[in-house]
Image (tube, rainbow, N blue to C red):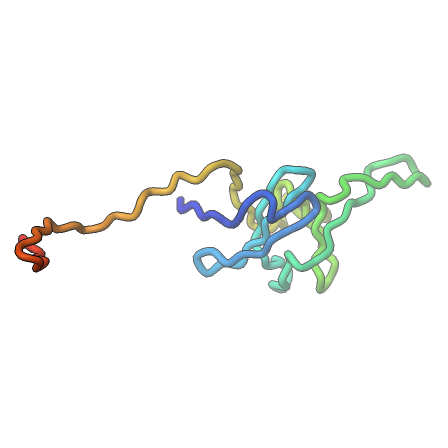
Amino acid sequence: MAKHIVGNTNEILPGHKKIVSLEGLSIGVFNVHGKYYAVKNSCPHQQAPLCVGKVSGTTLPSKPGEFLYGREGEILRCPWHGWEFDLTNGHSLFDPNRCWVKTYEVEVGQAEVEPPKLETYPVNVEEEQVIVSINR
């Protein structure tokens, strides 16, 4: 599994997103109440650019005639046809067992960066001439 640095935490503030291209895939990275989630930027319905859609909440189960609204900032709505997806797990709201958007693991921390590997050769300075020895 390849890991990619997509930015710093101060670039994706709570309630905001960043759309990135990784290995040829467009992926949206969302900050939902301080926790980060990543989803494929393609609606499974007709491949709309899902991550440019509105992020909001949804109605919650309630008694008849009563409307409760919640989960603000956790629901991503497709900009083309309004299909809604849970950012925390990728499942659709209308049929969570059969329709979902691909999600990706996100972690926050310091990346382990390997120093660049350079090929070096011994150098000798003789009478103001620089000589590089290459052993093959």
